[in-house]
Length: 209
Image (cartoon, rainbow, N blue to C red):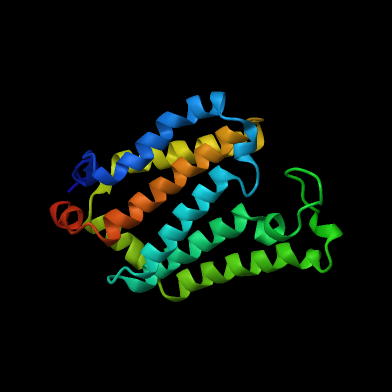
């Protein structure tokens, strides 16, 4: 089988019910960015709390997957990284500046705050070591070879990454940024659900290479 046939055999253009939250959140990005007050995009605000709910759902869904347990534990650890990123390793939870809205002390102003980024870096490296030590790249390759790739989820995830990165670096609309991340995290949950729980997806999309 040549590469073209291999790729075509692996592309899944089906639309699954689990995509619904992704699609809804994508559609809502623009109108909510226009009409919703910016305070909803503040740290610890409504939109960030929704993000945390989705990420915790991703975490618990991952650790409960019964097949390829170590691989999904790795996915759960990735969600922990996302959670820590959202709360800036706890800075936005515990070190708000009194009487100043959406303002927080910098790490250099916090006792032992200089340890935050190095510890976060060590945790990320540890997750990578876990991935390599358990040879989870082999599991990833197995999923690529044995099952079709949900094209729309891939495209939505890529769009979510682009939107959130753009909003983070160049955007000034906090609601747009937070909504983009909600969209991206829904896409992550869709991946976990399809490959971890949807038996019909895994059975019907077995590429049998």
